[in-house]
Amino acid sequence: MAETLSGMKRTHMCAEVNENDVNTEVVVMGWVQKRRDLGKLIFIDLRDRSGILQIVFNTEKNSELLRKAVQLRSEFVVAVRGMLVNRSNVNPDMPTGQWEVLADELRILSKAQTPPILIEEEVDANEAMRLKYRYLDLRRHKMQKNLILRHKVAKTARDYFDENGFLEIETPVLIKSTPEGARDYLVPSRVHPGKFFALPQSPQILKQILMVSGFDRYFQIAKCFRDEDLRADRQPEFTQIDLEMSFVDVDDVISINEGFIRRVFHDVLGVDVSTPFPRLTYKEAMERYGSDKPDTRFGLELVDVSDIVKNSGFKVFSDAIARGGSVRAINAKGCGAEFSRKEIDSLGEYVKTYKAKGMAWVAVEENGLRSSITKFMSDDEIQGILKRTEAEAGDLICFIADKNEIVYDALGHLRLEVARRLNIIDDDKLNFLWVTEFPMFEYNEEENRWDAKHHPFTSPMDEDICLLDSDPEKVRAKAYDIVLNGVELGGGSIRIHDQDMQGKIFKLLGFTEEEANSRFGFLLEAFRYGTPPHGGLAYGMDRLVMLMAKTTSIRDVIAFPKVQNSSCLMTGAPDVVDEKQLKELKITTVDQIGTQERINEE
Image (spheres, helix red, strand yellow):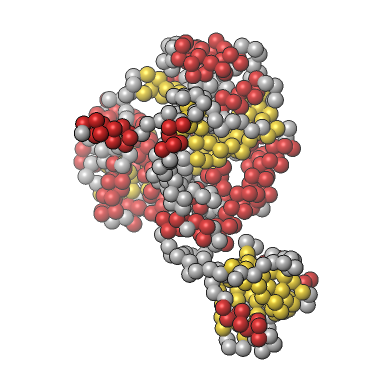
């Protein structure tokens, strides 16, 4: 029978004892990390979320204590009363390595079977096992440290935005389905058969309505849901630090958010972040880094050589330019000497992942050039390329020739891959920046229409409004993303607050007046009654915490994450439900239809 805590109260967390507690009685509780039996002495490492403390059972003094201590195994839950004393053998690798508890009383509160995964920092279990037994995985100090960090980020966010006049206002989780770029998760209504709520992809429309309602400054730590294909930094349910402000322009939103980043890194990590952050326009980010979320911790910037090779005898180059594309390169410093031909060829295969047809290259050597393309090029073209790429002996110049979007994507990823292979990325750097002036629209070739680059409520740049009718491709948006080390932390925009402008944008995006009213009617109705200029931003809180914890997956900073097929290995969700529940919701599944058809055939 498990014992109880009756009459025993915890006085200290394991790792919170200190020299002031020496020679006083303490009561600590937690899990047995390991046990060492030396005959007359039994040692255990006792673990709680604060850390580990050594407990000593001197079995000569107390036979009852001996009987109990011998039973202890890993992950037993126990309570111990005893005297905190200085250790004779100090363990410098342990925060509490100076002290130990000489146990006078032991209560075994819960016994444990041998766990299927070890509760150790460097666990060797694969991720599927860790997620199936998540409650065991979360006992590891590393995982608990991540979730404590997440808590501190959330607390700092609340403190900072409260101090700056923001009100935390909850928005509903059951909402109307509106198109926001990904599939909605739908919730059937029992009282309205055949109709569905949607889970919010973001609080976007509702926070705009809060601005119409006069709340001026709103924030929320909001749950969001998107039914999309997953990767390391995506989950079907995720968390945003969401905010919106009235009577502001781009600089106001950027300023308040630079203050938040400075505060959260200082308060949570003790790191001082310098502001203001650099700003790159979308055009400059793409041309220099091939990405709208560039990693600027290293060089390897893109170089446009289109003007040099537009008439080249190397048709891969000249044909790409003739079709409206470009030829761009990166100078992989030192790789011409360091990379073998096999490694260079592997880079050519790598860029095919990003729709490039291949990669041309020139290795610069002490005695000349090594390449299969220079024989098709003039000396002026070769010298022009070497000068523009600032090539030196030992360098490897890598070229992509294609449509601009393919060139940017392939070279943008290639510079990251080369940097990883050269090990030139400084993990201790924190390179924040803003990317601004995104395109307002992107063309959807499959559906032969324009899509909103961000969302249909983003305001165009004032000076580009005149291009909406004549040249929408050139219209820039008052949109901005905050980027850290090549990861988009958050994004936002100044919103449209004028009814006529919103109607014009809907029309350009292919919405009829009826469709716009059907999907966004409640927002458009609200706009009729006086709407302040407003704008905001939403952070991916999971990504922010992931980067602050220096891990590579948001699953490491979410208590109970899903895997890549959107399922939970621990609970078995999603799962079938009772047929009675389906009947109440007036829902028939595909399997039920098939069963009925077979019955009818028989």
